Length: 382
Image 1 (cartoon, rainbow, N blue to C red):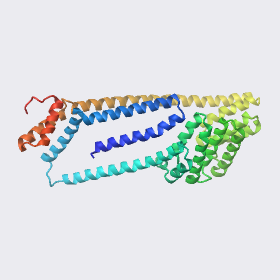
Image 2 (image 1 turned 180 degrees about the horizontal axis):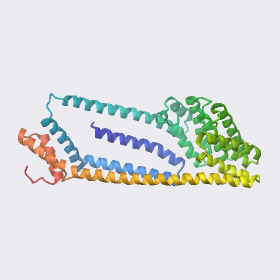
Image 3 (image 1 turned 90 degrees about the horizontal axis):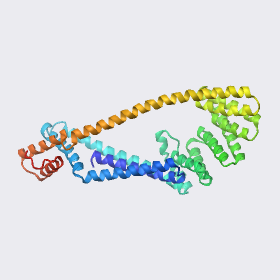
Image 4 (image 1 turned 90 degrees about the vertical axis):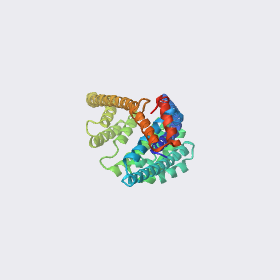
């Protein structure tokens, strides 16, 4: 198996794995965006597979491969002595290919482990799924939370308002985080806030309030002054909606202090809390302070929006550069490996000279005829 075949196999396995995640997520939350993403993925996979099959069976595909093999073999035979560094190069090349195969097998095994846990959870086998995620937290190798793919599935159920399916996923995520991070970690604090958000959407406000209060209490114990500004903000929002305005005010002030300390006074997190706080201030009749808080939030949002536009402009320039690079690579490939390409003509000449010098052999003759057919030069003599 050469390097190109190894790369092809790796892309094939990656596409299959991607579909293994994307199909259940789309079924869990069949939004237009996810349906479109799945359709594009399936079309891309079908087109890529068709192209690879065509390249394996078509004259041009075989010719491109033959050109490369001929150039490498001929260069080795004519320019590199047999007892030179070439033997070391070939050994290194063999080691590289074997290492590539081993790496591909290892990565594929890890991907299958994570995918198996994901699919087991999707089909309701949460205990077995939890054991896989806990034993092999593959996502942490990429700097993500343990059980990250499970979080995506839970989010899909929440977006579809499928609460009976979402709750077991949240419970499984909790068991995974308990095992991996411990019961007093920042991850458990964040999950407590997520539970509160879920109960709010389910309109179970008593459980939501209890979840938020447990989260901020654990956050204070675990994280100190950093606490959980998100948890305090969500709790204050809920208390405001339930008419507990004095308690809500205290929680907004705590949230502002924590978020300003952690993210800076002009961050989006601070603006979120300021905006919600202004609603409470307006409700209790402190309209002047409400306007001042609202204006501060608006200034932060406007500044962030202007910065986002600048970033988008940079991305657009990068996209044009990538497009030009792709066009340039296609043009270069055509100039080198096309029917009249420079390397195609060189390979034909090398093969003809080799046959004239060393005599006929079936392998080189067949390769030469293939390249002549590809280049449209069957009737020419060399």
